[in-house]
Image (cartoon, rainbow, N blue to C red; front, side, top):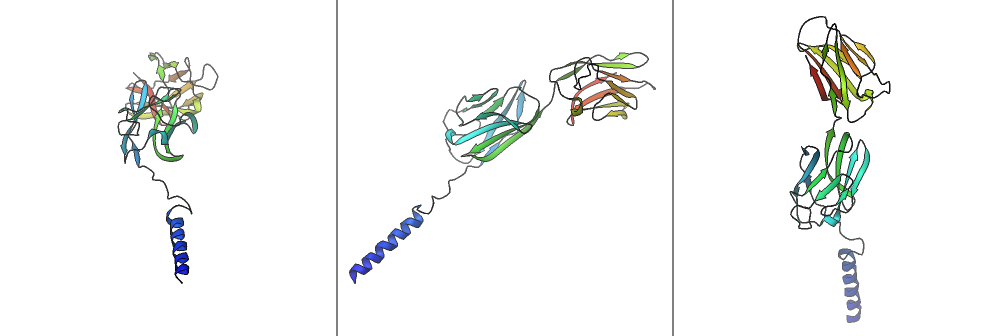
Length: 232
């Protein structure tokens, strides 16, 4: 009888050990709660600080990726102090080996578009930060005559005309819109792609037919953001 009871007790102990000891799977691993601060810029670089982390977690458990317009362009896997991939990098500011508030990601200008910094913990995305980098465009000084010519003086980032728009106002009232930007005219505003390559490049030209005196403004837009303007 005692032997039978002993066998039963051993079986119970084994079953309890199996349930609570991980025989049926280890308990889920804790996932940290991490928040990234809003991106900030010190020309020409963009920075993203870690704002909060709910506990010490080693950098080796984290990875990060930089995505531009849906395409991954750089990866840090795993995170480490001074880790870099191209123009994308990370600094463990307090040098403690853990992901901590004030640690910072940085990226130098590489390409325009919608940027997303994705932070992973054990292959699970836990935080992200997004920002838009716009093209660098310069307009020349308006040449005023029977009409007004405004040339594109230069474009550091060559992008298709279809990504741009242009508006013309006189005394604050819209009198011409080209959206998307293309060779042709609308109202008092016309545009010529002098290079004929379908991109906005140096030498392309806006022409305004002046019908009335007033304060004129041409604004060039890219994905809804103002890039550059000319006034006269």
